[in-house]
Amino acid sequence: MNRFYVTTPIYYVNDVPHIGHAYTTVSADAVARWHRLLGDETMFLTGTDEHGLKIQRAAEENGISPLEQADRTSQRFRDAWVELDISNDQFIRTTEPRHHVAVQELLARAKANGYIEKGSYAGHYCVSCEAYYTDSDLVDGNCPVHERPVEWLEEDNYFFKLSALEAELTEWLSNDTVVPEGKRNEALGIVKLGLDDVSMTRTSIDWGVPVPWDDDHVFYVWYDALINYATAVGFGSDEASFEQWWPEAHHVIGKDILRFHCVYWPAMLMAAGLKPPKKIFVHGFLLLGGKKLSKTGLTQIRPADLIADFGVDGYRYHFLRGVSFGPDSEFSYEGMVERYNSDLANTLGNLLSRVATVVNKKCGGVGPKPRVDSPLAAVAATSYAKAAEAWDNFQPSVALEATWQLVRETNVFLEQNEPWKMDEGSQEVADVLGDALEVLRITAVCASPALTRASQAIWEAIGMEGEVTDQRLPEAASWGAYPGGTTVPKAPPLFPRMKVEG
Ligand code: MSP
Image (cartoon, rainbow, N blue to C red; front, top):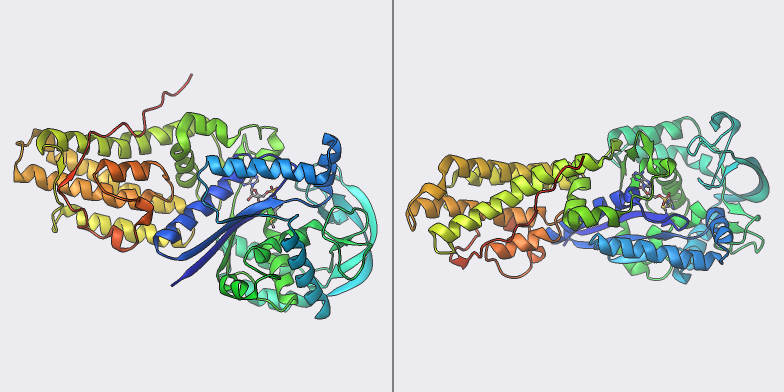
């Protein structure tokens, strides 16, 4: 049996969940769901990043302790993920004791291997990034990411000898480890420019994981945070589990945290004598008016606001289909309405309601079997092959387009054949409707990573029993499995059309 381990970044608890965070999480969720359909033993991890100066300051501003700050906001992430039908197997918090044990163990190994040394450091620090910058990194004296002033910090701390791992990192990055290609080259470029050793502990704050060999220090939040991916599958607590899952680790991240994930993290693992992750998928930003959400002040667009208008399926479908995984993408409400109407209401919803209506009028409400030699069989096979490849390459948008291609062609097939004009009870009407029902069955399975609710509704509307998510690919997508003879009730409208406002 194959194993598949997929992670999202763990989210900072100074901010509440917005559609940018949800984009990463929904993408990872859909891919995890696809792997479950394939029968892979799947582990899907998300969680919250709870240490560091940023959180400590947010807590001070709110007049609460850092842990209270973390408790409250972490819960908001959990709630947001429930609202979006996120199927994570674990939710990790970096304040958990098991995580402290893992961080201390992994970094103690790196130190024992000679990759951590004491030194002193001074630099421009951006609290929002939780990162130091050199003079040349700054843009008009400001943080290059947040365009806000940085602070001058000087500390005695421990350094991670990143420079000693340049050759190993170059080698790791010369394989197919970071996707898309452009992002792999970006990471390679960072390594080729030459890596400085980096400061990895702090004495100026105490909200962090204590350094086991020096009581005055805590680990800098990024060095603690990245290790969550190892903690969750048993590093430091269950070696057998870690050994099973770790070789299958796939990380999904936004491009803002490429350097940490594609350079520092594999280097930390190498330093500790462990394998780097199997693959890292890097996506672009969702933008509003050309700016990253956190910089627009428009982070008040909550997933819940859009779910209220579009439903969970409409929400998930929009971001999975409408945002191609990799480049930046401008969010627009009007664009979301348009896609909902065209793909969900007019294409998929329309196919189901037409088929169910005609089955009730012409076949006594009992679904006929598909033809073995249906002209749609080849279309379905091509659609599945494309979708499977795209899901495998972490391209939900391409995968869903392939599935919708089949739905669109089936609508055309109905228009050409006009079963509503055929004789009631005739063989020809049974042939056309049986084929269309088979397409709906296959579509319910293949669309289920995106449409967590409508896929089950379609499954039941064509008279199938059980859970669509219990089906197994590729068998469930092969032509001819719709049994026929099942009752097809008049379908409820799945996706009522939305009006474009204004
Ligand atoms: N805590 C760190 C990650 C540590 S992982 C070991 C962090 N957290 S974050 O909450 O600021 O952002 C996490 C992720 O949210 C980003 O990498 C990205 O995947 C996602 N996004 C946040 N804003 C986004 C957009 N505007 N657009 C798309 N994704 C965005 O960084």
